[in-house]
Length: 234
Image: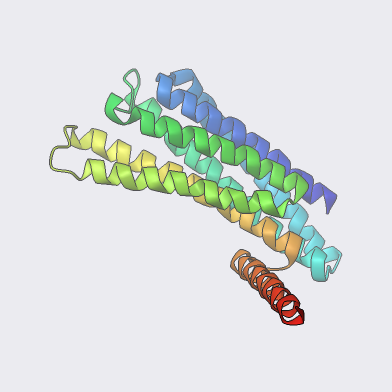
């Protein structure tokens, strides 16, 4: 089980490096960086297969139950999400490579994408920490962080579909795809975080949030009853 958990962290480290390098390729029109990302996908596939094999071996040989079974099955899903994050970084690098030596992004929208890149890199780092610590609060915070990328993604869609959008069809396609890649990258980080919430609590994320809300309501009601009881005693 420890080896499986370690494999997930190693995989996340590799994807973190890929994503950072893909962002460099995009914003600096760096062909070497783009090629580096493409060369890293084979290593990611090796780590993915190794992690999956560890999970399948545990299922086949150890007959896990309860918490252990939950960890193994969740680990299989996490492997797939992290793998997709790496694939999306490759897509970003591919667009940068295709447009080299020019930049893929017009100046008008580059700032939005730099923000998406910054937030997504931060989410990757937070995802790594969640895989280490199983910190439920930090996992829930990743979901909230994703909202800022969703907002930018929606704004870029509004820009590219406006009547006064000045850029070519080819530029528009690249911008639309890149925005989608960052949005999906963040979504997969959120999915990993949700799996950790499940592992740590035994509840799916929505169920856990409902449980917290119910507990807060009960505490509020208890405080109100306590105040009322003290008032009646006066």
